[in-house]
Image 1 (tube, rainbow, N blue to C red):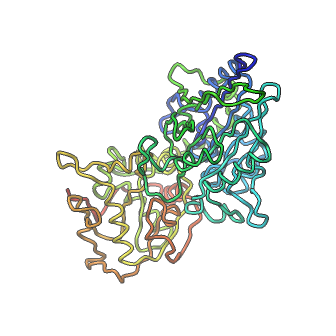
Image 2 (cartoon, rainbow, N blue to C red):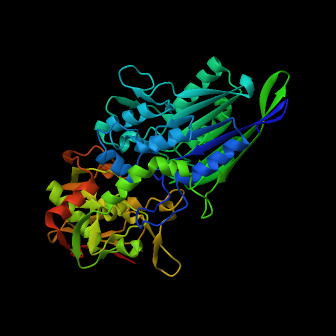
Image 3 (tube, helix red, strand yellow):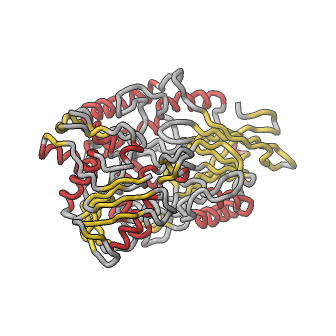
Length: 534
């Protein structure tokens, strides 16, 4: 129970984050069972409710995108009246609130607004405002929860990384303005303290840590995408006791500058739990203790039967849809070792370039392995295979780039590698921690190039040619890439502000599927146009 004594009260906060549509405990690549999923966390949530009936359950963003199920729901069920199944599962678990994550916008405002309208809980984000009114675009960005018969007042404030315009399709965020998340947090926390006078302020932030929690040293380029460390540093001023984080897909349960913090991974890996003990002193409830932990499902965790029932129809439809045969591959287009695929031209990436070049009419193509566990394609290709390799709903953009831009981009890509003690290539730790970012290593088609990773960073492009002639700074080329990269995502700042020649609004997964439908059989081949030297 929540009450410890008449003057002591324990309050539990539960948080999911970055579930990314992983509601059912199924690995969509293989069809096998996986313990991590919201259905598994649901069993833990129900156990926690039995122990502490008065608790706060929040989702910290990025719930609606990420799995084939999420893709199926967004594309194959358009116009259907029934509740979005992911929302139905969250309603079943009686979430108190959810945050807007960056991926909530991926399928457009129509689907998002419909999902919000079907939710039995509010969606929070202080910094996302309506361009016309200047007010929070999704309603009041905080909620008040009263505990212990109303004597304890808790405020939950939500904020979202303001970096979304750097990634998202502009049509999906039209009419919205994204204010700095840290500034929004401080502004609204002050307003809440003045107007509500709560006994506890919880901040939920769809963003992560830009610095090491222990040392304070930067763990990434300080772009403003992640500001959780700065939020903790400002916590005393803001009056914030607890900070729920996400976006980086990390497993964190710790303290920073006196703030209790938690981040519960991704795909239903963990349930974040924070316990706060209040003490009644001189007629006022004050925070005496705080601690956070992660509750992880494992193979012994029984998925919640009611959540599985809610998801049954959508899941069955998803499985039928993703097993549709699309076409066939002659030769080997499988990806065994991703590192090997990033060291020299590979048939799978060559195929991706072919799709992009045909769809865009560009001269050059840029692509990356988007999955952390890329499989490539076997002899028969289904929608399951396509979505396993193209899980993000990226579209394509053609930019006009100079020879200088291309060289700078290749130098940025070459930073992916370091040399191990034995002289073999290894991945730069910055691409593995604090969040895996292997998708920020690009491979090009239409040029011939060599990256010598024995040389200093910034001096690794030792060959760069087009049609047998060196590419020089003043050359100009039309280059196709996904919209995330075209916006400068992944610290490719040389692409920002470059002329946009064309935008192909079909998603990459659909372009690949259509390519197979059109040609049916595709030959695995590559022209060996580039390599990494070490």
